[in-house]
Length: 265
Picture 1 (cartoon, one colour):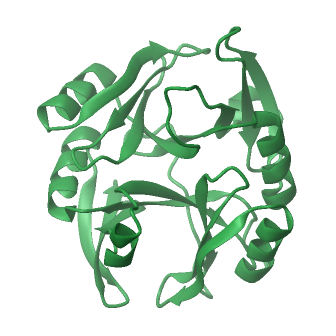
Picture 2: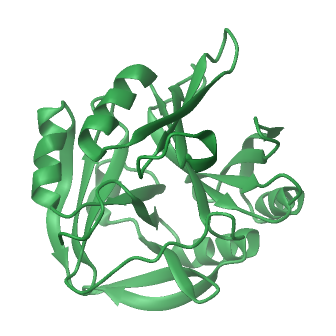
């Protein structure tokens, strides 16, 4: 679709081994409501905030389990041409994982890994479809996207050339953590307009990966719900530059996600 922007985060999908348990867990933690639907011939749950769909939930495919894939969150970015973007992935040293595939009522999708192994997905909307993002400051909205990788400078170049992301500032996190680089998906150039960050993966993180953040009103209450619901807190809560508070969590089935409270709630 010619009016579809390249590189805008547009969907978030949890693939898990127990969709029923995940539905109850995330609804309690984030306040999401669930809308049951189908994608092709598969049962599918849409996560909703105020009646607007922000993501989805499906059972982890058997072939993925057989290949050793754990429950995980996958973030999607928009593209007007799936084939062209996927070809560019491979030109830049990444790898196609799956697709392109047409999904009725959804559009054309594909998954890829960057040169350091972190996975991301592409979405080309169906004709006549459009995506209206929920304000990232809304409780329950996806508010931040974070890549831990082997080389943040090289990753910045890869995603800039692939998706057109722009520089939006840096933070020096000290001699152990190094630089935290922020990017924009719409050409903005200030921290206030950034949508995510990239940093060098610390030794305690086992793989290079993207982590998605969900906005909550009260992170202390949300983390209590994570723990009481069978999940765990991997790091945090901690205050980040600007005064917001974040924490990285693991759900009961093992998928990693993060929570984000704005300064003052």
